[in-house]
Image (tube, one colour):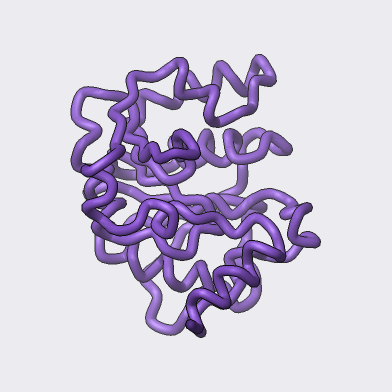
Length: 200
C-alpha cells in the first residue's frame, strides 16, 4: 500500500490567490475528487501546504487526512514534495498537484505499481513529463533536499537526478485521454474551459 500526498501549497497567483482545490467541476470540488480516488489506494493521505485544514476542506465521510506544512517554506512544489517524502508512512509516495481534477485511481495505482527499482514513475505526454502526478520512492528525498539547499527548485529538473520509469504512449493512453487525465487548472480561462467541457 502506498502513501499519497496532495500538494496544496502555493499562492495560486494566476488564479487570484484562490484555493484551487476547492474549485467545483461537475458539482464536486477538485479536492473531493482527488481524495475519493486516493482513498481507494491508501489510508495514508497527506495534504501538504501551510499546516492546518482550511475550512470546508473535507467532504462528508472522508478518510482520515494528515495535514502537514512544508519543512522548507517558500520553495513551491519541491518544498511540498520534500515534506511529503519525509512524512509518508508507506512507500512509494503518490504525489498529485491540487489542481488536477481528472486523475484516476487506475492511473495513480499503476504509477505506484511500476516504480520497481527506479526512483520515480512519471507520466509523459506531448507536453513533457508530469512530475506532480507521479509515484516516488523514499530514496528520492536526498535528491530533493540537495536541490532545495542549492536553490534549484524546478521539479522537472529533479528528474535529471533520478532514475525515471516513463509511463507514456499506449501505456498511458490505456487509462484514458492523457490531456484530460493530466489536466491542470492553472488559470481562470482553463477553469472555464473545463467547466464548459464537463457540462457539455
